[in-house]
Amino acid sequence: MIRTSLGLLSRDFPGGGGGARQNASVLLSSSNRSALLSPTRRFESPEAARLHEDENDAQELDFPGGRVPFTSEMKFIAESSEKRVSCFRILHENGETIKPTNFKQLSKDVSMKMYKDMITLQTMDTIFFEAQRQGRISFYLTSAGEEAVTIASAAALHSDDVVLAQYREPGVLLWRGFGLQEFADQVFGNRSDYGKGRQMPIHYGSNLLNFLTISSPIGTQLPHAVGVAYSLKMDRKDACAVTYFGDGGTSEGDFHAALNFAAVLGAPVVFICRNNGWAISTSIQEQFRSDGVVVKGQAYGVRSIRIDGNDALAVYSATRRAREMAVAEQMPVLIEALTYRVGHHSTSDDSTKYRGVDEIEYWKTKRSPMDRFARWLRNNGWLSEEDESMHRSTVKKQKAEKAEKAPVSALFSDVYDHIPSNLHEQEQVLRQTMKRYPQDYPSDVPL
Image (cartoon, rainbow, N blue to C red; front, side, top):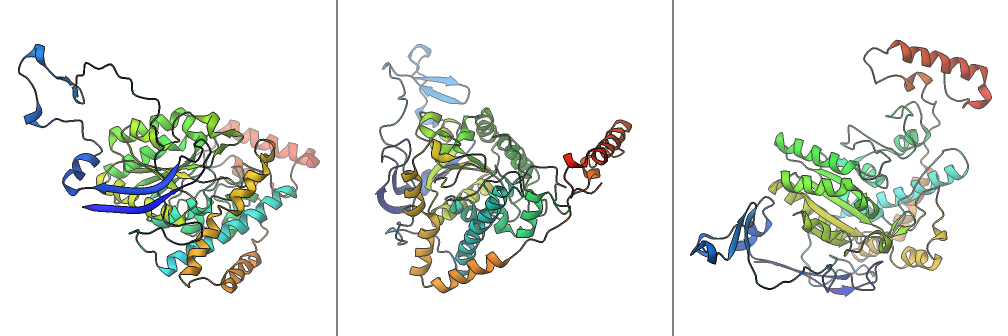
């Protein structure tokens, strides 16, 4: 018998008026575990329960996918359950663990790296956000308030797992070893940028780190992740695909196609939804009527869980278990992480136009994932104020070197093995135009 009890708490979350109850009590016996958790199992009835006395007296419909029992009671399935789905949580806001709990204890080294990466991400976000405001880069968005979702989940994955992110997951790359210079090369479009300056800022990618290049269209990475996962399955790899997206992405058709695709094929993919309450200026109350995102998984036959996305230990534990299930049982898993976007959606947004400053300040000061995790580290005797101050100072002193921009020729390469004549002609015309009207083009782009 496996039992996990994590206390009983509740908190207000957009769309729920305090009903998103954070508790959890999971009770699952080993005898029914395989039947309940099999991703491809149809609703099969035991031989003894099959009723075939008479075709006219049949109490079940033998229908593709499994037997369906008849009933004389006309009853519609309710649009929502009376209680909201519980939210898995390990840490109180004061950094104390909820008792009793049996989560897998993290080592000091892993825990400290998680926190230091959160500090690095926070510092990097501040520097690049200010660089955009100074006109040095065209666009940027931060991860403020959501640091635990990306970094703690990344810590739970294996390096062979393939990540298909949205655009607010640089923490995953940071955890895997992507350096500040590499981030700078991308947002500034330097010669060393792996995308050769062709992408807009924050569209990171790394073949070495199994992180597919980010693309702006919302939700397109979701069916791609299922395809990657199915490829890993066919090749019998001990790895899975992991894809991130926001609550707004669940309104895209790609989300629904991906979940159905993954469930039917038994693809080892972990879907991680950062439900931060806002899809730019659209609140989740305007986004959907369902109980968040977690209930959508069951409709497609996908095992799902709702977690406190501001609890680094809960994120790590749930992601680690989800990955184990996805790989071992060859099945998809959906994680809905309840968190909050403290910053603006991007440098093109002013979130105070559609949400209250008091709301933002509350989540920034009272629900900070970094503050909660830091309290837990201090409670364990692993973090001192001196250590934290020293790391912040060290990160701020790191400088990304100024580098030459990618050359004009990079616009025309890497598409054709042999560049066709029409592209040669376009390149020549562009070079001539840049020489004729230098005031209209960046002066630091080599011809």
